[in-house]
Image: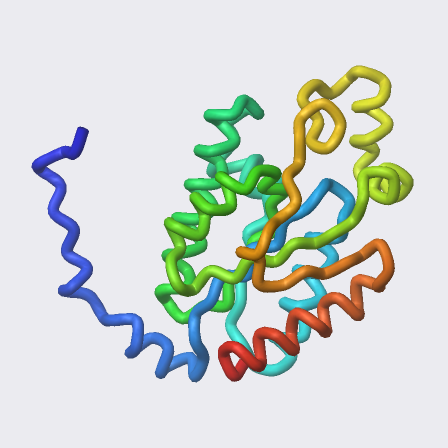
Length: 199
């Protein structure tokens, strides 16, 4: 139900073009997703540092960090996962509208969740699948989550007893960390960003 007493007044504020002109860059949302341990956060960090070195204003929205604050009241039910993605996307959209290169690193296991994020963010959205199979991620297991899931300590673990849907033709970038290093993948994403936005 829409609240009739809410009256957004975005038109009164400085517009996006003014802010992008000040920063000499275009806002964009790079939405990195994949299994836990696929390399999302590592690639996000490498990309951000390279952009920062080049004088670009950036931010990273990391799934674990967001769940420790903004989304700390959410669990892992289907409804909570959807609300988690919606909130992340709304924040990412706000940052992009300020001209900020926004790098999101969230598992986002289902296509419908990625479609939701794309709908919220709009034309600034770039879908980036960080591809690594379950066995590879379980071998890496940087947070010890796979071992805990196998021991039955974590229920509804993505890729094990909660599904993960790989993308179809809608994805803009695929970074395969099964066969390429995080550094090589970050460079490929930077090349894409340069071609797309001139950054």
